[in-house]
Length: 328
Image (cartoon, rainbow, N blue to C red; front, side, top):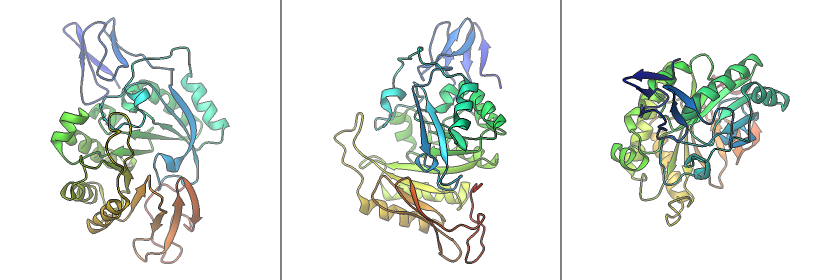
């Protein structure tokens, strides 16, 4: 795809829904995309800020290649301003270390050599370094690897549609169901994230959704029930919903952690909305996948470790119902 549009001596970045219009030398809201000579230059191309091998369950993805490892990397920069960000040291920074270089071909080679089944673009918003991510993903595909986005869901329509053919799965944060909170606090739009989610489902990309519950900010019952209904009715009842507990961080060190009792209530609200798979995260509780038809226990995880696995070629071994996901 074309990553920018020139107009009247300036360019419009097409990577996210901010559509920043940049004069010569100007950098976008993300800190990493710059107008250089009338062209969009990705300042972090080839310069990751974090590289790790993670269990795929850490993304979190529970219905995508379970028990596999994912070569995970992220860069500096983000297009949102979440005050609770757990990776704020890189996401909210513009300090790029160009002494660290990892070309796309090398990233894909390392992923394959380390026995990973996928490459995950994570830790910060991958849309803001999309040219680099896509080039890695293209090389990864050549080696038989899958590709994963961990995203805020504020990709542009152009990027969302460009993902088809090289992106296999995504976990998208649906951070609130309040348009005003999205606009004023997070510096994004609820409607934009909803559109991205619906587009990715339509394109056949495997989608899971995460909501970090921040006490006093997005924890009202009507809001959380609204998220559950949106997932069930607009994306599909099979789309897993990860309810994640907040822990004090970044600009919200005075906010208390999310209570386990509230998490349990939210899981019940998700079930009442018709969701098949609702998981609790960041709490000392086992995450169980049960058959929606006969309630047989299929997978049990504690943290990122799978402690029980009974799926039979993607099916419930008891009633033979196909369990939604990408299992091999």
